Length: 337
Image (cartoon, rainbow, N blue to C red; front, side):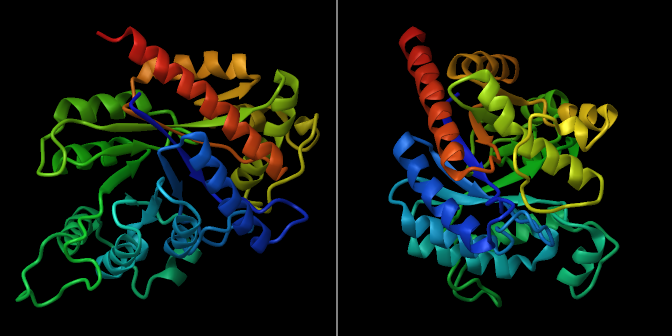
């Protein structure tokens, strides 16, 4: 593991507002920078009462303005919802305002339900143009000649680093073919993680921007002083995910000692499986669980995420995780030849 980073979905807790959630994200980003996180990514989701980062580029600008050195980016922008030129202009503007600090992760899913996807797009094209759209976007961000008929201004020449995101073999194959870094959404869809990493690493083609494969693995985290406290705090995310899976998305619920009172065991078992690439507990427990993830998947970078109802407890959780991962990285450096 070369670096560790943080993915923030800007959750809206029950009893709070979107304005509260966005203010919490700014405060968390400042704490994350102080704790040593390398990147701070936000994600595009739509029509979800519990997520405040729908206008992802706008929120990235706020977070970048509130921090100094940490890389800020999208994990990701759902490219089918947008014209590549518009994305290039948005992220070219961000890169111009915050040079050397902006990342652009691209996803192929809509990040919402199909009715909302139709509302987002003027036309629903039947064909999958994602690979072509990615390449078009990269061209807009590159060094286009002044004579090009269409240019992204701002955007041209910013060369914003582009990542491919995914939870299946499709993204792994595309990232390998284009020679781009690859981030796997294992924090909520770990089923194909091992296979996707093997495909990406074995079929990677070096590019002008990346000479060797670079993999980011995502893990859910919930750390506290004790295992019992962490388990209690994590129940909010378990309930939120179960409600989403049941077609009832809402704000981030209050934690509970008894999530089984709302959902039967089979549904909770499905949620546990979906969220299984995770670490929950005291610093010692989280350290063991994260060490297992790192040893099994050997990521170049680990990005952690987690939704906790209480903002202070959420900040503290990510601070504990940063201390754990910093210690791991220092130990690895001391023992490497």
